[in-house]
Length: 267
Length: 295
Image 1 (tube, rainbow over the protein chains, first blue to last red):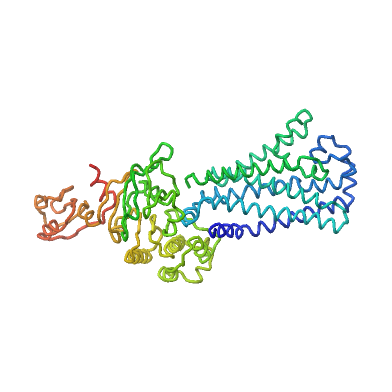
Image 2 (cartoon, rainbow over the protein chains, first blue to last red):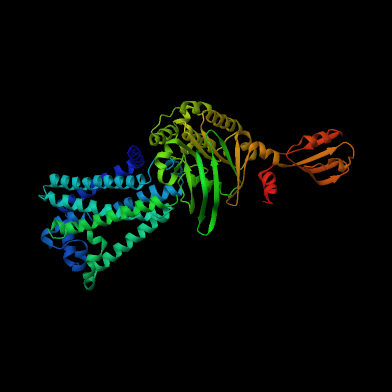
């Protein structure tokens, strides 16, 4: 237990600045979304533009309930905005790459893992860090929305956004889990990052294609990124529980793969 | 019960062998030198002993327990200096020692003495490791391995990067640990270093252990090259002794090899006036490879 805590402490010490900046970014991003779509004239301009967009594009943006709920849905879009996806995904990818493949590549495990530390401490420590970091990031996003609600009197149902944040946490944890499983097979930090980025970009591309193409809509249950749909949550559409369970299933399976592979491999 | 008990250990990297069928035992309170040229399999053996690599076959037991299944318990009693020493560069020297000690769950009883012996000042310890020289990093690596006074110390070429004074400090500490009953497994490709501190040596070549000897027996078997220049021509046959082999002979100059005891040869040389004598420390290749080539 003390080895696990010491290892966690080391990761938090290393990442404290990155994590603090990321939490601040998440908070400001959601607050700025609230400000832009409730307090500025940008909303009117965007509504005009969105009226002109084909249904496929609006579906891609998660705007499904018509223009009347535009602002609320744009707030939800803030939880799945490409910028948020890129920043949070890269964090989920880079941490396992740095602390699994990177430590193998740079030979730092040659000292650490000849201390009385069980090998499973390493993937376990990484998962714990990712879970705590995601909890902080999504709490900051929710706080950003809450702050927007307080500042601009949005009258949003904050419980819906808490659900969106929870779904995001589970989804991004599954993403970190996939990235950890990839890193457990690699001995090169760069290669680990490239492989994970390649996987997620391919999955995102697949999701984009099926969202934009009406003939491929039937494939949407098989799209990984369909597991995280905050817009649906806000509109009260069913299936959020199932999607969260699938995300959790992916997390657990990939976690077990990481444990087994890291425990059996050469370092 | 041997502290280190390696049986039929084999490791393949794909199809190429790292080590093959290596069997070795090291007892308590022994300093064992593990010798071999670069790429011979020394580091592979050490990494297998430390559970960093998985063997293709065979097993490693430390203190009577299989290292694969009991590593977390066993490593409480082991200090390790890796061959390719990499430290956490963003930590200070002091925080690195503290961080590593947290995992060991033992008091760092020797830390202050080691810091003093290796001359690492508090100011230096408060600097980040990325600002350290290679030698300072090596000293820090040695201190982290020895700070808790482990019962078994495994070192892969630990004197690399150390200046002669710090090499002597390291040798003194290893002797000190031995006097306390600790066991030391020490890999090197410098024969002179191993000769200074080890009780026994093992020689590994191309992944196979080709010899395991006490240092004294090794010395007897050593084949060394000698070049003697005389003031006047000498008869070559005077130097045809049981343990010598003449390689080159001029009227006033002789190049020969001598194996084992050099005293009979020195007595023979002393009969003539010598103007120069070159008797270099044998390289590993000279001392072992030629000797064991027949094996």
